[in-house]
View 1 (tube, rainbow, N blue to C red):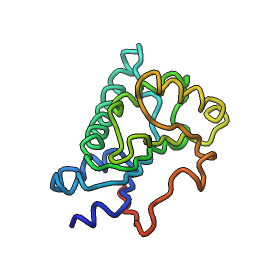
View 2 (tube, one colour):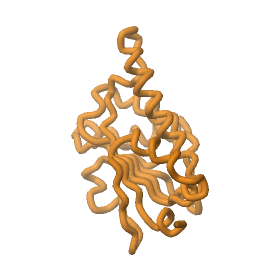
View 3 (tube, one colour):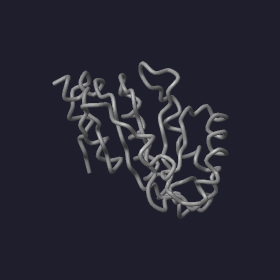
Length: 170
């Protein structure tokens, strides 16, 4: 069983898939997971807003995201984590990205203290221009990750270890 969890890349296309899977796996097996690849089209309207009507959506979406982050932080042997922000997920200023990523603030990769987890931004010109600025902002907020635009990483940032297979959850 340990090999099943420790030798595969777990791919999730929805945050709720990860949180629903967690209670079905014994804690020692959950801790054996080493590689997670999470793809998510994060809706920008889930970010904090002064609009009271939007606050209902903010709370519901934010709660799901926070639960997903807690599940990820519980993976004691996580060695590689990539968050793919897909599609046209964020129509607001780049300065709000750290607000979204704050629940992952304490994420550290096991056995690789210098290696950081990765975020792949959508392949849009706006993000390509803002990648360096966003990396600096994340550093300032003590969220230690690498920010890349998806085009920059195609074929380069996410390299599964030789012999590993992916387990996909939708």
